[in-house]
Length: 179
Image 1 (spheres, rainbow, N blue to C red):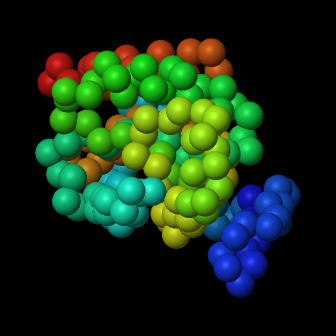
Image 2: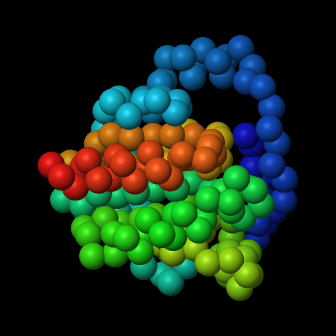
């Protein structure tokens, strides 16, 4: 996926294309974060990031050590992303007293998100225009969910939407909280 911005950093086009041969080679050799629905046992050190949410609160991964960080990569025009919002909101509500940070990372600009939120609720901490983080984490499919444990290790990742996506996410959170 390639996102193209205008001079105001608004995304004007998203191109989905097959990887060329050199990109396939790079992907094969740079497989730090495996994109699969069944990699719950794969553990990779998370890349540090700094993002700012729509309320101007900044989150830096290195400052979140000791907490679980649940990340949803999404965007407002992604139908599967929007479809799972009610379940994700229930997840946030269930764990509101836990030491978990819920981040919703998107390339959408703040004004687009604010208009979206007038019609739909999303209770994660939404970080607009987070293109650098999306690129650093090599996110190319939406929605993508990550869980980073209290040591800064990615302990769970799933891509795409299925009816059990949030159930599986919840099960992993519960297992981590029991440790």
